[in-house]
Length: 134
Image (cartoon, rainbow, N blue to C red; front, side, top):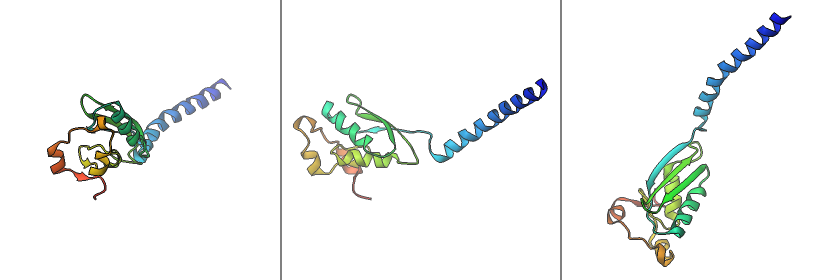
């Protein structure tokens, strides 16, 4: 009787160890492992920080977003099966902040609060495209 219980317990443990790697592989393939990105977003103040982070969080699949006023960088974690860096950058540019790859349209930029009007980078203006362009 004790041997039978011992064999059953060992079988359960062995199956548990065998299923762990399968679960990890399935999670990776389904896109549940977090994607991470860090990119430049221009802004000036706490109001900019709130607007930028809120725009990032508005994208389905974004798990965290933290913009640093001093470095002008945002770090985001997201679910790759739901979104990507481009979609997050487009959402931020749509609310008036130029990013590494996308520009806010001039009207939205000019309608930002006066303390949020940041100096636009000429290189970004020359090389980047508008958030609504494909």
